[in-house]
Amino acid sequence: MPTKYLQKKNILFIVAHSDDEALGMGGTIDKHVKNGDKVYGVYMTNGISARSNSTSRKIKNRKDAAILSSKILGFKWLEPGNFPDNAMDSVPILDVIKFIEKIKKKIFPSIVYTHNQSDLNIDHQIVSMATLTAFRPEPKEILEEIRSFEIPSSTDFNTAAKKNKIFSPNLYIDIQKNWPKKLKALKIYKDEMRSKPHSRSLEGLENLAKIRGNQSGLKKAEAFEVLRKIIR
Image (cartoon, rainbow, N blue to C red):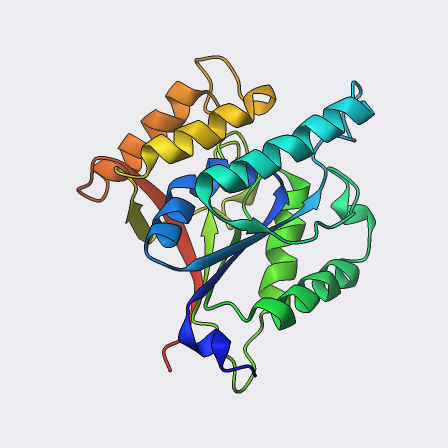
């Protein structure tokens, strides 16, 4: 393993769609970057093509928004996946796992972020399962932790039938000073935002940050569920 990856902490987030990074962990990304960590991200679908009003221009606009988000938050996008939008269950999950494993061998991350399996969105579920599988523990690895985040209008739309899989945060990260950057990134994805009252509105997202802050004695926070932690 190259020694350079042992000198600095590499952070990797794996999302189904660009905009998930800003929604779920925009403040935390900014915090990692400000702490000197190298942050990499990958999205698996274009996030648009499943919609009835999808056009090539809208797909390009989404890509452009993703680039702007990375510039605002200070991370680097890796080559995206080319999986079917909102239909990742239509391809063998092994294909998704192998795609993530290739990234794993390039980045050697210390911390990995991804979706929670309780999400209503099928792409989120597949990405979460594939990430856990791709990063199953192996000897001589440096991975310390896998964390899952919440996505408003997906995690919170979980149904009673899935109570055995529910987002249960056990890690809260202070984003009070990082909120302006998160908000700026969210505004880049204006086509994905909703008007209030809605959990995906700017007001709804700020309310969520305050709620997570209230739960942890902070002004604003992002919540995560630690899926796996290894102390070496």
